[in-house]
Length: 101
Image 1 (tube, rainbow, N blue to C red):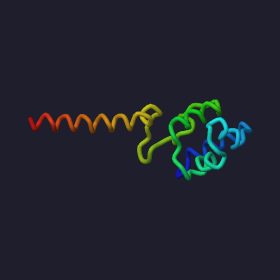
Image 2: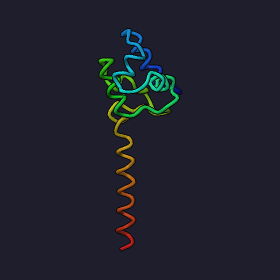
Image 3: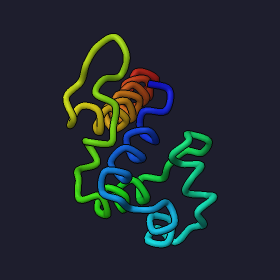
Image 4: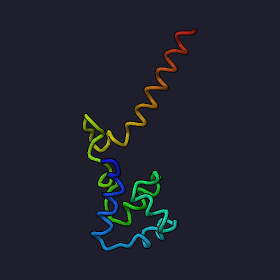
């Protein structure tokens, strides 16, 4: 699962007979930079993930790992987890600030 997203992108791209050069061109980057995404040598930007899913005519959910470790999350939970963590942190700070008053 170390490079799940890159491997999944490569698998779908090859099934559709799309070259790395064509993908890179569509994303506005060099073929070398795109290759690093597939090999897991660089983090993929969310905007690139959406663009890649569009070129491959698939959902971004099909490019993401099926689980996050021990517990499995549904697709919405996977994408919303950072939002929930931010909200939890914000609520904790508000509670602490109100206790100081």
